[in-house]
Length: 257
Ligand code: G
Ligand code: G
Ligand code: MN
Ligand code: NA
Image (cartoon, rainbow, N blue to C red):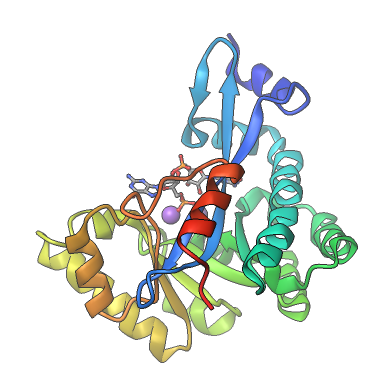
């Protein structure tokens, strides 16, 4: 089977869906928000990892349609879970660097939120450092639109790319996400621990919140909590789950209030 061709058909054949992973407030242990993560289940190939198919979608430009679709699937859950918890519930959506090359979709996202009656801060957008590395005027313009609309911005996989501290000053970033590669061996590798702790100190000095990714053990949690990390995501709390399961999680572990 030709993966790229199959992917083109996946959207209209209903093979794509969105899972949600809780982002937990490390102080209160409560669910603070959720990250929307795309999934593809192919009838013959089974589950295909986004690590495998997102690059194909990026090469073909299909990521624009898929990315808009993920956003439109995710946003209504913010309204539902906000109603369930009695307070605004933010959902973060990953946005590929390729999606910053086309002009239309930021205004469309704002129009869509408006139609749902959702404030901009119902959404945060996760971008990677590569977006800022080659920041064109279109990127800068889009980030300004987000700021004006109240949409928050998270810098994903922080520390693995072409990190430049200058970005953090130049662009309006709200969250740094410590990449899971630093979290994985934080208990055993002094270097990883030093990097994670330094990211937290620097981010706080710059007024940013920090989310640690890939927390799997109580030991990792304890180190990050002691270092003042604000939020965490990982299998220790929950895998990414379908929306109905997320809703049950939210009911059993109440959202922050
Ligand atoms: O969920 P998982 O860990 O398998 O995701 C693997 C990679 O795919 C991660 O880098 C994640 O950011 C990316 N990814 C998941 N969902 C989306 C999406 O909706 N859009 C984009 N651009 N990337 C996504
Ligand atoms: O690149 P990005 O941070 O968007 O991708 C997050 C990816 O990390 C998702 O694919 C998600 O499934 C995965 N993930 C989330 N929590 C954990 C974890 O605790 N351990 C591992 N190994 N992966 C995780
Ligand atoms: Mn992400
Ligand atoms: Na990441």
